[in-house]
Length: 77
Image 1 (spheres, rainbow, N blue to C red):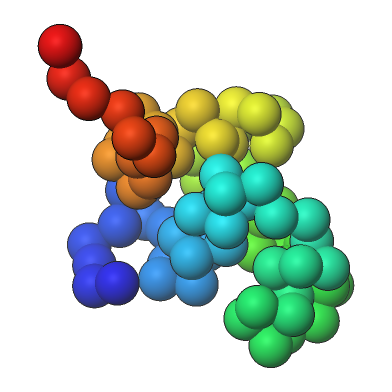
Image 2: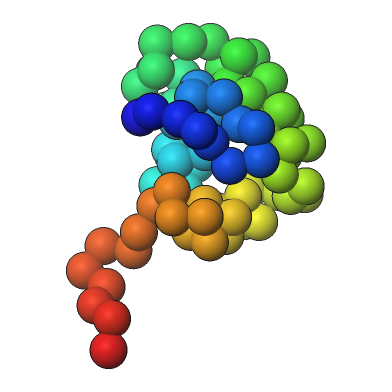
């Protein structure tokens, strides 16, 4: 990924958000990125604060709205 990122998110926060939108748990994200679960939680808390979302569901919605992820197999009709 290369910046700029929505709402001042860092590259790592954006990576975490994309993985949250893919349905991964904190331990799964930690394993994928080779970081601790505590660090994942920190990134999630930071991205929540920066984007103004309250929970993971809103974070996923934010990711879709800002073009960070796309639904697989979706076609525009």
